[in-house]
Image 1 (cartoon, rainbow, N blue to C red):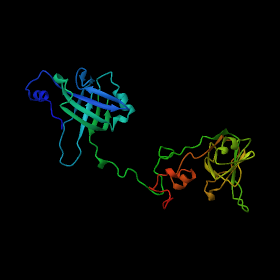
Image 2 (cartoon, one colour; image 1 turned 60 degrees about the vertical axis):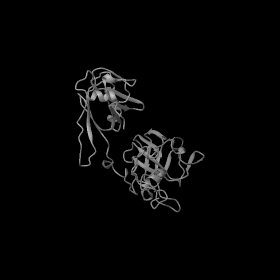
Image 3 (cartoon, helix red, strand yellow; image 1 turned 90 degrees about the vertical axis):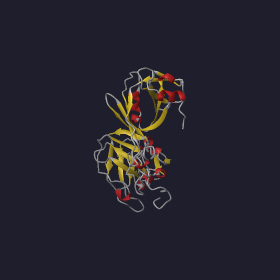
Image 4 (tube, one colour; image 1 turned 60 degrees about the horizontal axis):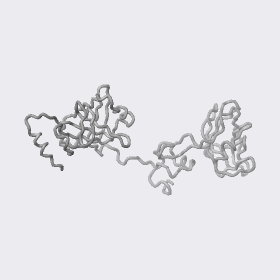
Length: 314
């Protein structure tokens, strides 16, 4: 505990004084920036720092016997026109979570580098009106936060698709929108050949624009897929969605075989050329299942039960 300087003790015990007690306020924002204010009519130089004039008030401090963590209201008038206060509020989510510093110094003893009061508090909430900014400050209660932080469900990934934790990135390889794409509902299994449907691109470049970027091997002008490859269709009349290319058949520049729904992909409707259709590698969405994550080769980022890889759900 800091010992109050004798000069400040003397000021505290005076009946009258020519000076005044001044509140100083520091609010950090951004990376290395701090808003610095003094509850005074003019700039205050203290400990080598200039505190800009700003009107602010604190609510009364009360005690509670119910175990509730104390919270206070800090209302700032935002009267200083040179302040970038409101810009910082908009940019940094109302400064919620920042730790502010409140100090009290005396105007006749600004040479003292130890304030009479020196407290810190976290900004818990922020309310903005035309006249003032009101912070709720105090010490956050861990009992008001969810524990554990995440809910783990074995069959459902909690991550936002393509977000920072999911980390899936849809490839950018695609044919430009074409009006020469048709859909054929097609064959049944024959011998060792699987059943398949077909997407045709008249005069297209399925290999050079799309499928050569999937795992596989070039065989002349065609592409032999190393494994089933997912791609998205958009812009068609009836067949938007994702499909799995059948690696039993090589992909030709104008032809790709698609396994039917019974083998894991959605079926499509027979559709002639005419619509402006785009075909793109990868997925544009996710149903958050482990199977979907496996199809995207992204199971190491699956957000289901902890230890999912190699475990009972792996």
